[in-house]
Amino acid sequence: MPRVLLADDGRETLALLHGILQYEGVDVVGVAANGFEAVDMADRLRPDVVLMDLRMPGLDGFEATQSIKEAHPWIQVVFLTFYDELLPKRSPQETGAFAFLLKGCSPGLMRDVIFRAAREAWSQRWGSEPQEPATQGPGSPRAASAG
Image (cartoon, rainbow, N blue to C red; front, side, top):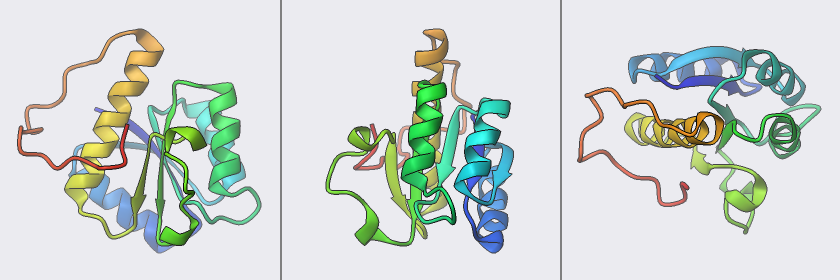
């Protein structure tokens, strides 16, 4: 089961994401309200994936991602935002992210991208990939911008 840290400055968004991800079989290990908290919690909790908002007070998602990846390069970051105009013209990998997702995407797509990112984290950290739960079927949606 992927271990995920949520980072978003919206309390309602965090609560909604937490509920969706738990329902989708994801272990939410922490919740950060800004980029500084995300960096600190990623260092302490060592999640597989950080689901990160781009726009946050203090340290934005891009800056927080750089700090997280410098300390723990195997942690995968998935940017989640309402603001598609903020998404860079570069690929996710060029920004240090595994993928970009827009808020409001389907829970199944979000789950699929998180599981793919977690497999990448496991592979980079331990050189192997734990088996996915049996609920992940062959018809699962794939993210066009993911890894």
